[in-house]
Each structure stands twice: as structure tokens, then as C-alpha cells.
Amino acid sequence: MEHLKLKPFPKGFLWGASSSAYQCEGAFDEDGKGLSVQDVAPVIPNTTDFKVASDHYHRFKEDIALMAEMGFTEFRFSIAWPRIIPDGDGDINPKGVAHYHEVIDECLKHNIQPVITLYHFDLPNALQEKYGGWASRQCIDDFVRYCEVCFKEYGNKVKYFLTINEQNMMTMFNMGGYKTDKERYQANHHMLIAQAKATIRCHEMCDAWIAPAPNITCVYPLTSSPLDNLAAMDYDQLRNRLYLDTIVFGEYPEAFKVYLEQRNAMPDFEEGDAEALKNAHPDFIAFNYYGGSTVKYISNEDGLKIKENMKNLDKANMAEFMTGMMTEPGMAVGVSNPLQEQTSYGMGIDPVGLRITLRQLWERYHLPLLITENGCGVPDTLESDGTIHDDYRIDYLRKHIKACQEAITDGVDLMGYSPWSAFDLVSTHQGITKRYGMIYVNRDEFDLKDLARIKKDSFYWYKKCIESNGADLD
Image (cartoon, rainbow, N blue to C red; front, side, top):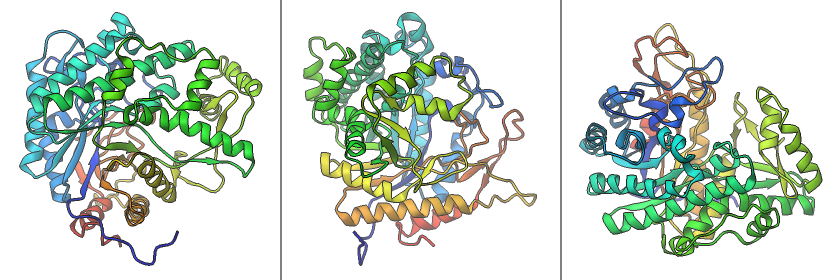
């Protein structure tokens, strides 16, 4: 619907941006930190590793001061599990604990609420080598113990915790390298139980809100075909509801549960699992959004052929590889939306889809919502006069913030907007060349240069937006 008048953003709306430890901190082996799976993962050709990244570990005070200058009222960042417990299940590292106290205190000094992600892809590599990481139920207990350390140390300072970042992406794209769907969904189940138990412990140990943080989007059918519409419904259960119904309602989505059972991929439940899911009541929902998803129906036979062909597919052929990863035989296959604008890296630009997603989440779960990622990742040019003119990023942010205001007018309870990212980070697949920040980090893939922080045009635009509480988007 088209509104004749938009509601203002609510008083106390959280304006900020997001980051993750392994993509920005650097200092990968300093002050007792253990290695994460990201530290030992093969480096994608022609991109940097994460050893230095944006050097935020050493420059966090400078970075937070710049965020304060923009007017941030929140900063979403992650704690690195192997910096707190280097081997994942052994002794606590006091230097790691002290570092995040310093970061949190620096945020609070500037009246910035820290929003802490407990797990953002950086599993301690020692646990991966010891028992296969999330493939083992032991990872549940080790994750909960790590979370308890964080709740004990930081729970009296932090109002908002997030459990696991983009668990659905880890599962859908098989980031664990599991050989069968049964193994893949069993590992996913272990994460769901770990998340539920961590949520329960948060409520028992501290006066803070806690939420899941999946990557969520509306799902469009490619055509008006009834089968494509059914495919979109089913894909919504696979992509979104499997990660939210379980934590909010304590149940696997009905139709997708049958889908898994018929393919011998339904995970095994052990005693206490169902109870944990039922007793984990998140206080809000955090989610990352990068454009709508579009699917069409695919038969079981055709889908299995695509999966079989993937075994011999060169991963350098990213388009075909992604099609294979987004194929669920007998359900749906992800396709490009001819009506959706895209960035130069092929990511969707779909502010209407953000409004739809906000509406769908609010109308299904009726929990406050926090956008924890949304951004425009493209190369930026540092001009000879030291400026960065990123009008494309300003346009992207403007449209998505307007969509937030439209959703608020629709009746959605939206807590805040925390796009990706405050300053440039190392992208997981495209290195530092794919930049999201409103603050430029002066380095390239292999030359660290001086790592200076330089304000982009979007820095000044977002500052103005925040000062007006979202009223001035010009």
C-alpha cells in the first residue's frame, strides 16, 4: 500500500552499524588468541587473508570515536570465541576477556549501546580438529560454556546479545563441508540447541535481551505458476522459518520437517532437545538483509541432476556453483530476479523487499525487530584530494531507510537499523576490494599502506540522517 503520510522513527531508535571480529580485528595470534576456522581456511585467490584485516583490534578507540561523531547510538560487533577461550573448551584467556571489556567501555563512554554477537563464523579451530566442530553434540556444551563466560563478564554492561550470525547461510551453503544432508542438518540441529540453551542461560544470568541473528529475506516466486508459488512457500520454510520457528515457537516448520524425513535428513533429537527449544524465548529478532530471494519449482529428478553435476564443477564458475547450492530437489531452485536491481557484485538492491520482510517477520512472530546487516558492497575510489564520493551507497541507504519508515508506518515494531558496515572490512569472498563502510580503511588486498581512516561522503550523509532521527534523507 502507498501511505499518504509516514510515521516518524520512534524516539530511542537505535542507529549504528555492524562488524564481525574476524573480518575487522586482525591481531589473529596476539595476546593469547587461538586460531579460528577462518584463520586456517584457504585464502581465495587474489584476496587478502584476515591476519591484519582493518586492524580494529589496535584501533578500536579511533573507530568508536568516529562512530560517535556520526551519532551512533549502537554498535553491533562480535566477540571472537577463540580470543576468550583459545582452544574452545579449556582455559579462559584473561587478555581476551579484558580486551572486550575495553571495547564495551569505550562504546558506553560515547553513549553507544554495544550489541554483541556471540558467534560470527569463527569457531575455534581446535574444536574443529578435536571432534569436527558443530558435527558433534559436544560443541553444544562448549558453546554454552563460552556464552556463560560472556554473560558473566559483560552481562551487567550489555543490553543486547545475539546468538549465532547467519546460521542459515552456514547450513544452506554447507560451510562445514558435510558429505550428506543428514550430517548437514544434524550439525544445524546442534546449533539450534546450542542457541536455545544459550538463550535460556542469558535470561538466568543477566538482565539483557537476546536474539537469533539469521539472514532473512522474503521469497518471491519467479512466475505466477502455482508450482512456483508453492516453491516460494517451501523455500521460505527452508531459508527462514527453520531458523526462527525453532527459536520462537520451539518447533521445526511442518512441511519442511516432512521434506527432511522423506529424504532421511531429519536430525536426531536427544533427551532434552525439544524442551530446550520450547523454553528458549528470544526477546527480539535480529536479522541481516541483502535483497529478496527468487525461486522456481524444480522436480526431484532435475534437482538431483544439478546436485550430481556439482561434484565435478569448478568452484571458480561462481554462477553455476551458486545455482547448485541454492537447489533443493523436489522443492525449488534459486534464480535471478529480472525485476530486481543488483550491485556490481550481483547482490540484490531491493528496498521494497526489506519492507516485505519486516512485515512478514512482525506479522508471524510479533517480536521487536533489529536490522543487523544491510549494505552496499562495491569498490570505492580514493581520489587524489583524499575524498571518497560514494553516492551509490548513500542512494542504497536512503532507499532502505525509507523502507524501514514505511514498515514502521505499517505497524512493525522496529528497534533499530545497523547496516554493514561502519568502516571497511575484509569481505569473506571478495577481500578488502568489496567495501561496505562509511569510513574508508586505507589499504588494498596486499599492501597495508597506513590503514588510515578516511571519511566517505556517506559518513556525512549518515551523520545528518541520525541527527534528524531519520527525517532528513536528502
